[in-house]
Amino acid sequence: MDQAIAYLAQEGCAQLIEWNPLRATPIQLPANAVFVIANSLSEANKAATSDFNQRVVECRLASRLLAKQMKLNWRELNRFADLQKALGYSLKQMDALVHANLSLNVYTRSDLLKLLEVTEEDFTENLLTPNTRNSQTFKLKQRALHVVQEALRVQQFIETAKSTPEDCISRMKALMKQSHESLRTLYECSHENLDQIVTISDRLGVGTRLTGAGWGGCTVALCDGVEESKRFVETLKAEFYANISKAQTSDIGSLCFTTSPQRGAEIYLIEKQQNNILPTP
Image (cartoon, rainbow, N blue to C red):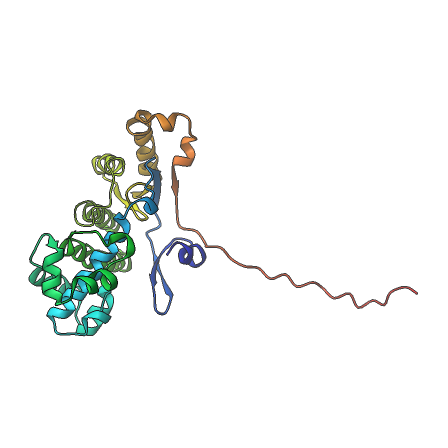
């Protein structure tokens, strides 16, 4: 995703990036949309924990369990997008499917062995990853709801941008806020520092969510105009960064700054001009 947007970005646009095949659709943003990037100064070493892989496994298990319940070839359908295509469902129908069929808040290993009708060996070797093979509980419903509802929010964001109503940015802010709340409560990949930034942004009427894999890193915030973005940055400096010792020895301007979508990386081919003059004897 990062590599794709680095090359496919366009000035003043968000990009809807899709895979298989890779394609990007530019979504024109309101002219007064300004973004603020804020570093939470918390870092997650994804290689040191199984948290990231656990979420991936839970999503795959949720998709496969739903596929089995719908009497499909469940081993081949480990992505919600593939399951949706196989069923011919809309995103709202997928949301209803998750609510209706994933009834448990927490599935145990034993639950999944019975529901998928697989052996312990098959489950461990073929349905888990090496660093999740000791996992005993799985939150399938929560992860599935986040993925499906996040896709709905993307759809709503695009529709809002295209219709350009007077309250366009306000609607987009609300979707950003909903996205973070889902990442915090359903996907559970936020961090207290990220949540502090979001709390401040909520008070100022700014739409903010974590960006990247989560468990630390940065937030991205949507502001309505330059003045609102400046006010948000100054408030973060006073109420967030002033209370973090690490920020005192850092360049605040590199931790929290305003930005807007620009053109991505480009390749220029420079042809050497041929000199046809014969050399002097």
